[in-house]
Image (tube, rainbow, N blue to C red; front, side, top):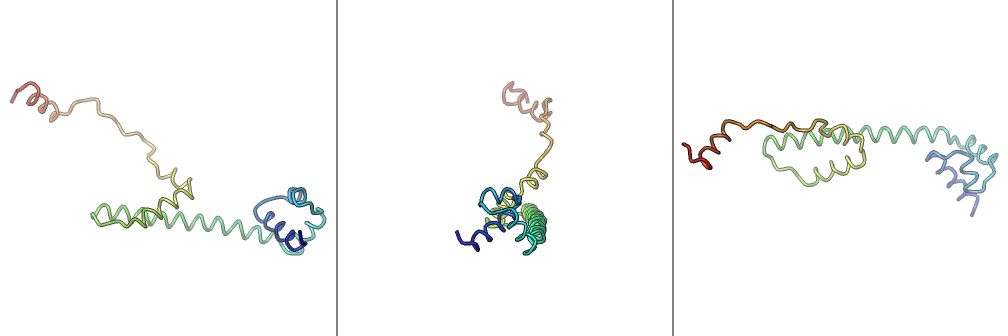
Length: 132
């Protein structure tokens, strides 16, 4: 493999979170060379920027998902038609951000009524017992 291809591959691995030792073992490049490249081409700065971009993306996706949920809720209240694209977008965002999905799920189980309502009792009296 050419030196340039190794350099690019090593840089990508470092930006994705691999250590110099891991890169050295996997690609067969001397640690000294990797440390030189890391310093010379400012890999630490690039890694930090890359991590920031990912967190910013998640934050922006959360905001967008929240807006979509509000829009869908408003459309449901007004009985307006909701486009399939909006539902599809929301589902994809929620799949990408499982922590957002977990935060918005219902935490309490609905209470099951153990008593019969007066209307239900009257209905039983009418239909089954024949009492009016």
